[in-house]
Length: 191
Image (cartoon, rainbow, N blue to C red; front, top):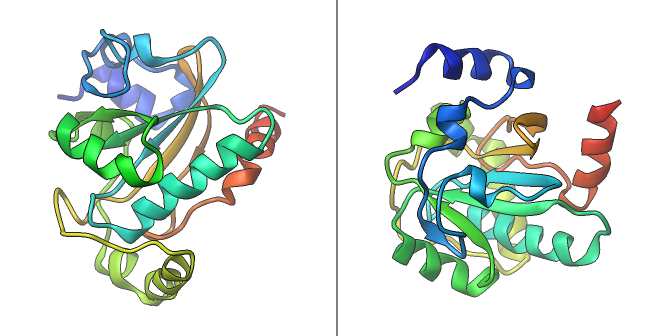
């Protein structure tokens, strides 16, 4: 699945997203017909790779991103990626962000193309993750039935045009940036 251009992109995201990735057909929830490129707006788009539908932190991410997108000026358009079918994606998003846009990626092709890796045991179940689980439950989020690759890490990428302009690679399954600060993190990355 990876070609030289994809390997180059993963090693140096500033080199640009390969045309084969941009032109790949996508299906999902709330999408425009066509390719991945057709889902991107004229400005910044925040690509958010979720873990699996049973993950409490995925539910927290969706809910907290919706809140930030509604409250923070200049928040980029959000495009989720998930490991299931469009029907499963609609059911998952129904509670926390029913109008969200999301790409169904059951074969994890986009996860691989963007270098969203699998977690180690400690990254999935270590002390930091257990503490974060209490945080998410206090906010009213809960996990669900396990599905997909439960060892897949999350990932966040801000893109503009054909370039990644900022990314967040979590240290563990529950790690995420302060969602409301994402626009300033992107501005800082631009220099």
